[in-house]
Image 1 (cartoon, rainbow, N blue to C red):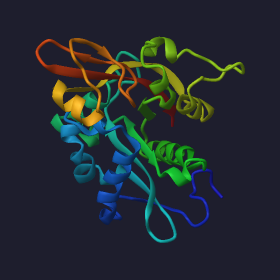
Image 2 (image 1 turned 120 degrees about the vertical axis):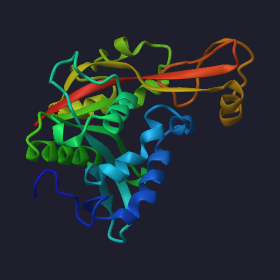
Image 3 (image 1 turned 90 degrees about the vertical axis):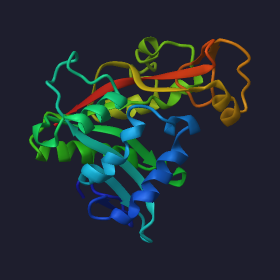
Image 4 (image 1 turned 90 degrees about the horizontal axis):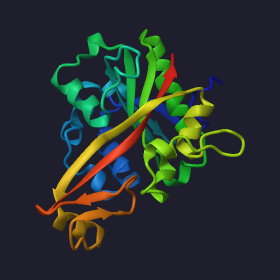
Length: 251
């Protein structure tokens, strides 16, 4: 069986072939993320374009009943192969794709999200989706797969700068973070940081109500599920600028 073939009883398809899975993809992503991650940002405003313009790059894994158990959301990007030429992050990728970075000029595939249902997280589905996306990039003749990775373990260390966290290693020399480690084991190269990959600015009151966390004055607040602190300002707004780590899987 090829390494990017689905396990027994599971099947991989794409959203252009199974458009009826669109709502299930959204539900799975939402269930895997903190509530604030779906709030308005330059990229989130444009997320629906993934389904409308890039459905062939929305990977879906279904079980024997046809229910969605995993998904990966990607889109073509134009990238010159240099660290300096990387987009600013997830928001920037979506803005460029929507506002002018046309798919026919693409040189790489960018994967913005990998979501797996809880009961399947101990399987190889995340690796399978990454391998399938890399294969798709290779078949398109592109450089490979670039991913603004959201390190899963970083939520436990919100006050540690991402620049330091991304360099942490296990005693065996592998990345300390489990999701970064998964990418590294597949041969991915860590290129750099997207310090403001996703930027969400909302009224303090909305943060307080959604998180049941009072923000009585300006300052930095540790928020459950966030990779770094949320900054509350004197004007009554609070901003979350999520840092990600760029990983590159060569085709």
